[in-house]
Length: 280
Image (cartoon, rainbow, N blue to C red; front, side, top):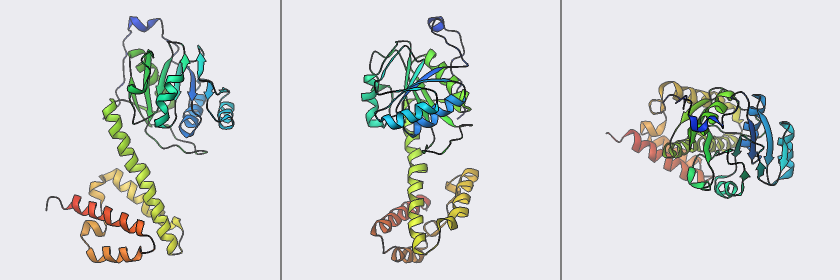
């Protein structure tokens, strides 16, 4: 899939609402990892960060201070912002969106990969979904160059602004439907969250051998590089792919210190065997 570049035409209905393409007034609801990364990147890209709304004053003020913005606990934005981005847990998104007060010309967008337009109030005129396909962590700077942003918009005016906003960070624009984005979100859970938990399990096991996690670094890097270069399906190795039952049984015995890890090993091994022997 290649980036879809959105609406280029001059649409008279929205001409009166067009604003500068170089510089937007942006506000946020939420002061967590996603808001923090986006807020600081937009600030560095020359945008005007106006208000950070968050329940926790300490984190909200800290983020606002880093971007010359104001902190508030009240999601009443008035006419201060061109776009308001909500970045809160998925199960809180609908409630947050229904509490926002702003100009009818303001675009409101959420960052939830698993949600669509159904969570917006009916009276929101310009609504969008602004989902960066990346993991964000506190105190870790994210490289936005070529970062995929999965966008959805209710109208051409919103499409254009979200596209311009993405491009100002160096990210790549992908306009996708809600169904596509939800599946991509599930894929992201597998390749990021589940993979990270496997690394956590590997760290627990290697500690039993009195060795540091760093010993696994070259293997981790080669695993990811090989999957990127030749595809994950063609990169599979190991006892499950070889149907090496003897090694499988020895590994289960070695994991006797953790019934949980034994169960994970059994289930993943069984899944690999089924996948790579389904045509045999």
